[in-house]
Length: 467
Ligand SMILES: *[C@@H]1O[C@H](CO)[C@@H](O)[C@H](O)[C@H]1NC(C)=O
Ligand SMILES: *[C@@H]1O[C@H](CO)[C@@H](O)[C@H](O)[C@H]1NC(C)=O
Ligand SMILES: *[C@@H]1O[C@H](CO)[C@@H](O)[C@H](O)[C@H]1NC(C)=O
Ligand SMILES: *[C@@H]1O[C@H](CO)[C@@H](O)[C@H](O)[C@H]1NC(C)=O
Ligand SMILES: *[C@@H]1O[C@H](CO)[C@@H](O)[C@H](O)[C@H]1NC(C)=O
Ligand SMILES: *[C@@H]1O[C@H](CO)[C@@H](O)[C@H](O)[C@H]1NC(C)=O
Ligand SMILES: *[C@@H]1O[C@H](CO)[C@@H](O)[C@H](O)[C@H]1NC(C)=O
Image (cartoon, rainbow, N blue to C red; front, side):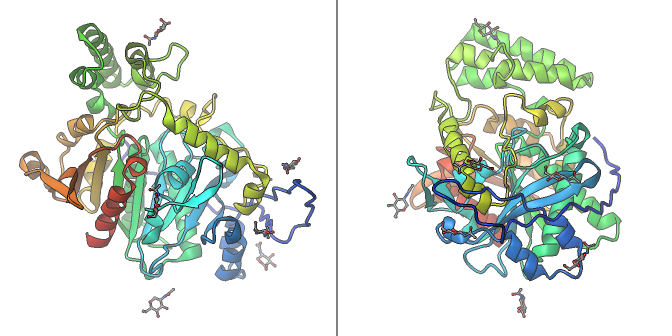
């Protein structure tokens, strides 16, 4: 793991392209999708007022049930014309003081708009394809930002193959640049602090960004100080070597028999050897053939269990695909595109040719455990897991947490686990030691906020408002 990180100061200068006030060409259903809104040159231009830029970025609320939001592009690496797309929702209550929360989807290559529309944002899309408000949204009491990350994901873009992230340093550098610009624009001066959250493969992005932010803010004179308080990682892949025990897990759940277990064990051993010898690509191929199944041969998991999905072991079908498709239809509409300032930009969400994942192949099976150890010295780290997940199971995450070296590590190994009750139900279990909070969420799979919106709302609220 890299501990010394190059400091790159980028002065981005993309062409400002404001879609407001463009000629109205509407006739019948023919709505102009407008142009993508690039904000960086405006943010960098001292003569343009913050209020003016916010007005450009403001999303037409009347198209979104009156919900206030801001969206646009932030140029993060000028030489490759790489820009990250963000969509920001100010807190509905007490926005001035509310914590600022960044949400990152995993994948790699999954759009964070999945988090917005399917997990924890103020809006969801019903079976008729219409917007409705979500009952439990993190935006009630958080200023929440969804960023399509890394470039090439969702609406985020790059013009060059070198623009794609190849490791977690690339990811962190671009995200840090974007967050800095957002702080310049929205300021959040009175906010109680900044939290980095995410799910799944974001188990790598989240620690990478927190660590980089910490280094940047302690070792250099930074223009903008971001008041980082902590992170929350949901069913996160952070230390593949020590999370790679699928065979035992599936065997104990009754999904595979002894023959299947034998196959899993031998593949897992080979993958471990690959990782230990530094060959992350061969480890990745084995991981894919075991469980992901993105390569043509599919996965052993699917072959042996017949399951189409690995997000919740009570559900054999891919329920998420239906929801994501519904979201894509909504996002493709010109009226939506116009309102959210993406114009005709392509929307990439784990495409058939997932370029984001391809470029991260050598990084996929690498660990961020040393970064988690480092941030545990200074910041709250909440690791939460839906119990029913197959792709990043709770017990396999314990496998790596137990090995971490941090202030409180000894205590973590012996600390008493507590029962978490809400409204008379047992909703989960948790354990605390040092700055680590480890939580298991009942009746939830990989997308815990989707399965248990109220519980996860309560969790994030306690985390960001009490610690
Ligand atoms: C969407 O916009 C494109 C131009 O970018 C236009 O060709 C197309 O007809 C529009 N579609 C609808 C349904 O309005
Ligand atoms: C900054 O904004 C002003 C006013 O809008 C404009 O005249 C000027 O050209 C801009 N400067 C740069 C460097 O873009
Ligand atoms: C905002 O949305 C409303 C309702 O859909 C629409 O009538 C109006 O034209 C939109 N405004 C702009 C500037 O696009
Ligand atoms: C950067 O990319 C955007 C979006 O594709 C494009 O509109 C813009 O012209 C590009 N800028 C440069 C300098 O190539
Ligand atoms: C949201 O709350 C309303 C009112 O309490 C209720 O009728 C509705 O079923 C809830 N929706 C969901 C998806 O839980
Ligand atoms: C932040 O708090 C100060 C002091 O209470 C107040 O004067 C100021 O208006 C607040 N800032 C914003 C942006 O609301
Ligand atoms: C899954 O089954 C198919 C059909 O029998 C086979 O071609 C494929 O190699 C199997 N994949 C794995 C990873 O075992």
